[in-house]
Length: 434
Image 1 (spheres, one colour):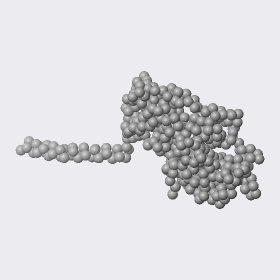
Image 2 (cartoon, one colour):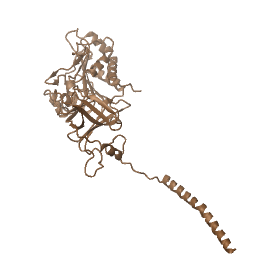
Image 3 (cartoon, one colour):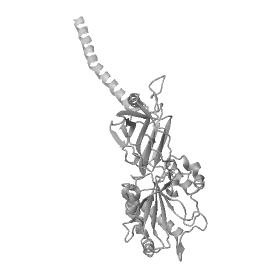
Image 4 (tube, one colour):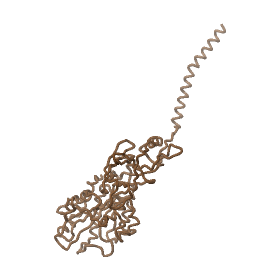
């Protein structure tokens, strides 16, 4: 009887532990979950030193370490004109045709695998249109004799470029890079790449405030007693500055950042340190518009025209002049150049240099700035080797000595500048900001 009672008590204890055991496990689990929630463990995600798509370091390493090639082509030099990137297999020489011209360039987006294809042309605004590239991280290839060759640089390259502001102050941040150590290597004894392969990284970004989109250069006032045409109350230098202020206002309505290169009565030379071109280059602007008025001893001469570089297409110049000609009664001056509309003039060259100083001296190395003449050589220090050339036009607004042109310019100046801005914006696919 006594043994039976003791066994019964033992069974009761075992039953209690069967219930209590799982309950304690559950409490422990709940406590652990609460601890983790209150004190979460932060697992660091290591990013590569150079951003590659949206990859972390491990993903970037796994992707890039496979991108090695035996068929390569070395790019000796790269230059910009406006928003166009130009590549050169040989050192750049003004007036010569590089071996890359006529070949096919392929940009392969590492992030998506998509490919963009371009024909490399001789005209300097028709190679790689940076303003049209979608966001991505691109490898560069050239097709040569049906062989796809990966582009490499002769040395390490890190070059940053910003396109126009197109989306509420944002443009595309373009980075041209070549570095065997572009990101941290997964290997102990060597770099991630066996060669400095060229990459283009394209990302939307706010354009820094110090960078401008457009510079406007009202002619005259390059030296004392250089007011241009003066008659009665009309002063050409002051009138052109007023036009520049109006054009600035109209372009800024499209979200652009615009600089006028001189004040109304300021005397500022085109050449030399601190001169107009020096100031223009510091802005890192993409477009340069020189405004001028013509003068003639013949009252018959009238109409507007535009001059562009010998080395570019006529597209930008034509679009701006077409905009100007929306102004009532404004006519065209001259017959233009072969293959162009009347009034659209391809610049002349002497010894391969553009004769027009506005166009040439704003173009950087790609147009031979700082070399043409003794005056031009005053720009040599900041222009001759400058990779960042501005796409430039000289816009002659009419003959101020012609009564009809004078009436149009003085009475419709605001509308004329609005129409010029409209032509500019339509060409670059810009919209008015809200």
